[in-house]
Amino acid sequence: MRLRALFALVPLAFVALTAGPAAADPPTYPILPNQYFVGVVNGKTADAVVYTVCPGPSTGRPGHPAGGQTLSVSRVTPNGTTANLGYTGSAANSIAAQPVSSVANTPVVFTEYFVARPLPTSWWVPCDGDGRIAFTPLPGSPTARTAYVTVHYVNIAV
Image (cartoon, rainbow, N blue to C red):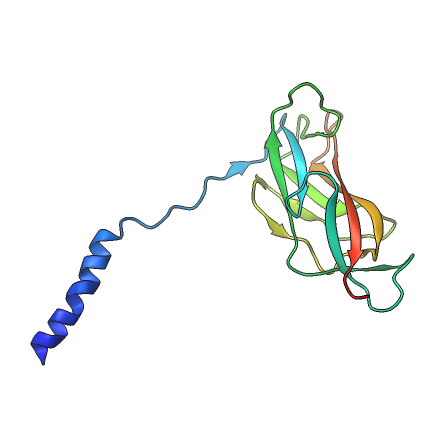
């Protein structure tokens, strides 16, 4: 019986020895002053679709985003124009994302580039139509500039 147990462990030992080291976490890039960046909504830097869940008539009223959507911030190098780029300015070490609307929403704050975070299902956004999500450097400074991502809200509950 012991011999059979020993032979059962040999393949496991071989796998453990040949598997190699575990994959390392991807590198992180901290948000620092004087950097250009873009906001990213569901993988897009412009014309992103944000799905909402608004039962009943949705025209002209606010609702909540559906789950499973993401936000992130990407550092970029300007090549020619900086018209659609944000700039962290002389002081920022984080960037806050939130929809541009008359309703107060808790921002999603980023301290690193290329790290996706969930788009909050608690946000109040238009059920359908067009809008923007602002990515604002924090703390602000006279040289900081907010980046905007244009979004199209699509109600999936109708």
